[in-house]
Structure formats: structure tokens, C-alpha cells
Length: 310
Image (cartoon, one colour):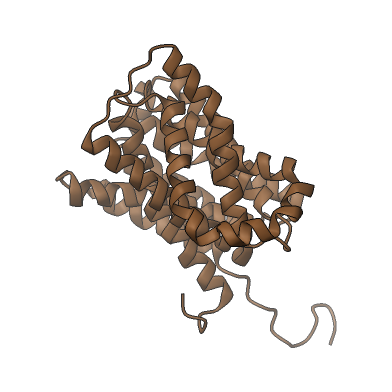
């Protein structure tokens, strides 16, 4: 990322890079549901991230371990809300609900984040930001329902939807917690902690799934999917997301999360051969406009006369 870019623009581009990488997560939650149990999938994803990231972060992690040890509860909470429980709930949701429901319910995460950031971090929630939220949410509804808003009346909700809603809330908690991470701990150590703690926390759940006889079918597609989730959706995306939060704040970064359904639609056209629909264009424009409006920095007040005085 060029150093000549303003800090706010860097943060937006980093957050967009993360959402591009994460946009395939819902696809994997559906395509791998019959081959890998949810906790096992999340465990293998975290394990892959640990192995792949270790050569780059091990020396820094060892040097900063005394700092991590003093706040291990905080890092454990960050790991579970951001990776362990969050992704496990998504994979559980993918086994019993539709992609449309998952995409709609995912829009609650930025809303949860804005509310938590407002009360816990004091980040502002003004009219401009609220208007951006409304535009982005409507764009996602239009996109996922292919322009047929009457389909909202026929949506049915089940346990998978509750898992998705819970996961969205946990990701909001993670995004807010990131703003509270100690500045003395480097970004590499922070990510290494998340991958390591998530792997250790998920090991008992993955072992239970194996003991319960849940199927684990190894294929080239499963291996490639886990490799993608570990390298791209974990290492690359979380690295970008943590830096974006530091640059533009939890609330602004969370709003860019709304672009995930847009990127998922583009990927479906490019890789799955799905035909584009007018709702993709209209919904995508609304999402982009909403994010731009909500994340645009406020203009400084112009110098001049103060209202009420001459």
C-alpha cells in the first residue's frame, strides 16, 4: 500500500481487500457442508493459518510473548469472536439455511458494530452515517432478492438463521475489541495469537465431531478450500482488516463489510457462470453509494462569521 495515500483512503482500501477475500466464505460454508463438519472445518482453517503464518511471525511472537501473556484473556476473546466461534457459526448456518438468508442476516454485523462502537468507544453515529447504512442495507436486500421485494414475505427462518445472527454479533464484538488491542503488540503477533488460540480452542470441538462419527471426506476440492480459507480468508484478510480498523475506526470499517454480498455476486458471474440481473447493478450501486456516504470524513468547518454574531 503506497505511503503517499491518505490514512483514511488506505484504511478503506485495506477493508475492501478483506471483504473481497471473505466474499467466498459463504460459498465454502455451503459447498463443504457435506464433506467437513463445521467445527472441524474451522479448526483446519485455523491450523492451516498457523502453519502458513508461522515462518513470518514466529520470531516476533516469541519476543512479544511476555506482553501477550499479561493479557491472554483479551487475546483469547479476540480469537474466539473473530475466528473460532464466528466462523464456526457461519459453517453451522450454511448446513441448514439459504445463502439469501445468510447474506441478509450478515448485514446486521455493521449495525451491531456501530451500536457497540458508539457506547463503548464513543464513535459518532450521525445522520450521514445512518443514511449510508439505510442505502447499503436496501442495496443488499435488492441484490439478494434479485429485485423481487415481495420475496421477503416468503422468507422462512430456522436454526441456521439464528447461528448466522449470533455470528454477525460476534464479529461486531471482535471489530470493536480490535480498537482496544494494546499498541505495544505488533500486528503479526496479534494475528498469530488469534490463529493459535482459535486452533487450541477448536481442537476439543473438532475431536468431539470425529468421535460422534460426523463425516470428513478428503478431496482435492476440500483441500483447496481449506488452503484458501487458511491463507487468504484468514491471514491476508484479517491482516488487512486489523490495519483498516486502526486507520479508520471500527464503525467505518464495519460499514465496508456491506460490500461482501456485492463481491459474492460478481464472483458468481465470473466463476459460476450465473447471468447478471438488473438488481445486481442497482443493488451494487446502492451498496457502494451507502459505504461512500457513511465513511466519508467530515469536512472541516469553513472559517468565517459565527452564527448569531456580526
